[in-house]
Image 1: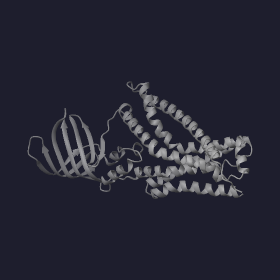
Image 2 (image 1 turned 180 degrees about the vertical axis):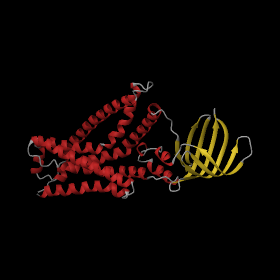
Image 3 (image 1 turned 90 degrees about the horizontal axis):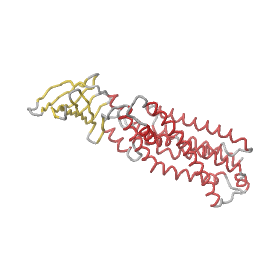
Image 4 (image 1 turned 180 degrees about the horizontal axis):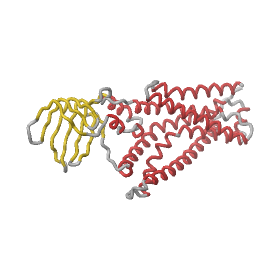
Length: 366
């Protein structure tokens, strides 16, 4: 006969789980910070102006982004260790023999994970995205020793091409990926130091190797009358693939910023598939974390002896990493447009939840 679980027991289970989650979070954070610090030292070994203090700062900026990716694994291990603790003190056996069901034992953990996932989405994700963006700026300046040459906004695509005797600011309203041309193109050409030379406005620009072919061009010199040309060539190394590679990575945008950026991206003619996939993956993540709790429970309710916990952790770890591999496969299929994004994201999460629930119901009734 199933009895109502006392509130104090629910809070006790939630406290144990929270302590293990916090401990594992700290351990993984420290390990990632250490290895990231070592990796940045290796990368900056040839850069005389990059000191240890800057490297440590960059490590601190990047670590939250990495830790955010492995939070489901932390939840998985924290659940296993919570049940190990309850088994070790015979508390789980007492609860089960008292008529408390598996579902009642899991509810405090699932509730804690739900609250943590809300915190992760609302607070931790924007924080890690902002820190990752700052890290990439420092990486670009100090390690890659380059400056950002691309900006995408509501007014269109903006590029900057540095030249020997000046620079050119390029603006395009829209890009057609199929025909590889830009529409509504404006080029603002400057001589050093920041002296405006002329403006070229073209109806379209065809992207070719080593240059762009501007069609229906209006040339406006700084001190002369405008000149109309049927077409002209503009030397540049910018290619369609190169432009796409310089877009703001989805990881540097928060959950709240991504929808508007995706609209801007698609309005400019680019594919927003990778950014849309990342945004929807953040929506699925809470369910994925709940699935990890249920998965860990499947491997934790059969411990009869203290020495069996190592084998249970091994099986849980193997299952967790298998799901991560499945996620990567589904991501590749979604980004290649083989399957819909929603299907690629929800299949692993829902499958883990449904299979785990079925197994736990079998154990409960068995």
